[in-house]
Length: 295
Image 1: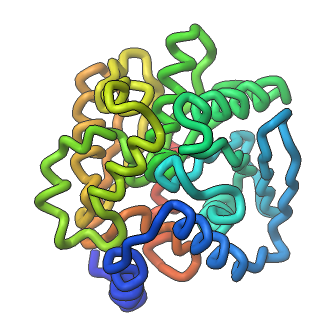
Image 2: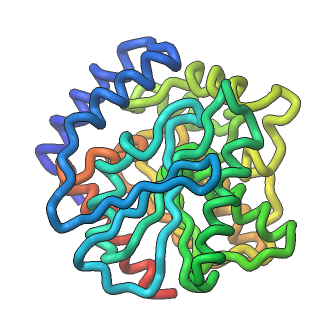
């Protein structure tokens, strides 16, 4: 599939915005807040905010919602930035396309709250969905980048604790190896639009100690995936985290997991973060819908 003209445009813009600038964690947070402030919620979507104890969450409820299933979406941002407002631009059209209610928690961020704070908050949100009467077979866990890795870690932790698992996991450009051992960190360095390996290394060490980077709950590529639910992985062909996705798919398949791996040619890290600005976002969401329908 050929890239749209808008994809070519936004690839140029994003490279100028992210790849050619070196920002601190605080500057990344401020930039995300400015971008989120420009979003206008469509009238066909209801946004309900509340807190689960210490944890802020938002329900995104499209008027068109017709599915029995609900999605727990864990946002990206390298475990150091991101939140509800930053991810509405992705999650609102996702919920609309899937016709599904979506729960978006604002888990605690590093370095103020290092591992396992984010994992504890994700488990809290999942447990709350169960308490609200959602059957595990009607819950999907999804996430992008760090949120993709956190989605995997959440299910691994649930399995090890003997808790019921969700129906499936969807990972978009997952950051699943915080040791950064994949060859794509070198082979895709020039093609990558958004990320820099040295920035990821900084964020990884803000999240956890060096000796903990290969913990499967931090870097799920080191996990044993036996008993894992079906897994959809979407990744761009031009991102430094490509090998995170490829290794993840290989290890999960070896453990007997039903894996759907989609490598999107010419696209960059978490391209659906542009929401309706990019036609390839909707195409990725449609592919998620087909995966869900196949369960």
